[in-house]
Image (cartoon, rainbow, N blue to C red; front, top):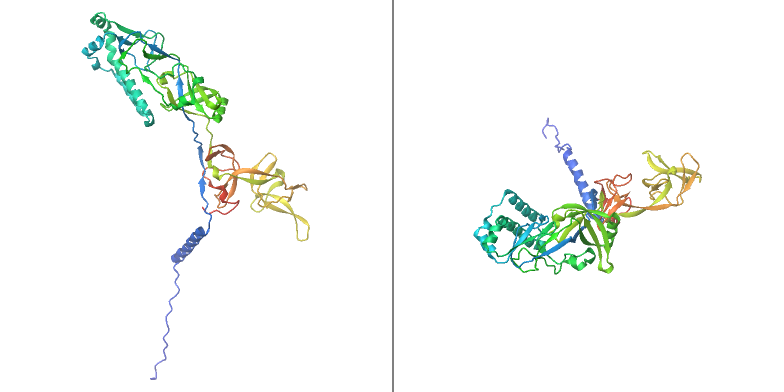
Length: 467
């Protein structure tokens, strides 16, 4: 080795440790997510929850009833061709003309010659037709297609009245033109609503209505306005003469008892959403069924042409917090006099002073925190998680003792807002087959938007819950 050259050693350069903070944080999050996913799949119990909302129960208060009116069927004194001049559903006074019966048949020829079908409609006539068409369209249901034919005859009646109105003005000339042939005038003998159909229910009473009648099997409605030729003694129209009428519906016994207690009920007619109050009379026919007779003193003119009406009974509806029945359960609690419950501990929680022996066997007291779930005038409902039957409790600032022994159960649900099953007492106002309406704004109960366990049987008290 030549002199003057120093020994040199080659050392490997070590890079300084450079920790990427972002990657470190991402790694921690990734590990946490993996652990949560593993815990989710390893946990066999996945609790379903329900969000508490305000609401009410939808009750099946829809019925189809038979409308019974004070109806009088009027018959023709003549034979011949009939022409109507009053619109169906119109109120007529005493002595007003309803129709004419042309015994010779010449009246029809004269009407054709006068082009009665080209009668111009006034603005009020057009408005009336438009309103009737709009009401029919709004209430039409394919399940009641028969109403199409009723509507057809109603329109024909209106058009016939408008087309034949000129006949009244020229009736004397027409009688002269028919060479003395009779044109019979059919006038009302009392005031009422004119109806151009019969169905055999005229004169029926509520006591005679049966379940078979409500089924509408074999029901037939005969339209009189479609008859062009009538014989003497044939029905030509009928009059509904009183505003007092009734609707008969079939109800179950529970509903009958409720209606009988209320005596009056508000009714909504599905045909036009009209609402009215009715007096209720219960007709109990034993094995033949229970019926409710709803008596009205108004609105007859609206429904005079109807025999079967669909209605909704607007009974009292309870509003509150809506919870599923599957969430509701019962839990036992200890009853402890209020004087023995105090606040203590670092957090100021409610609890009791329990007497326990120390290491030397001497009696001492310890504070046992216990949540209050409900109260009466004398007692608190305390959780049985920390207390046991036979525990001796000490009254604060006193030597008075109380031995835990009494218990009672509460109805409630499990609230999981805090991540564990926390029992909350509820007061049920009303329920059906699926849901219950409970009182809101209670001291120890639920609030709107609380999360509760959907099936109370899937959790235990104070169990940790993974939503």
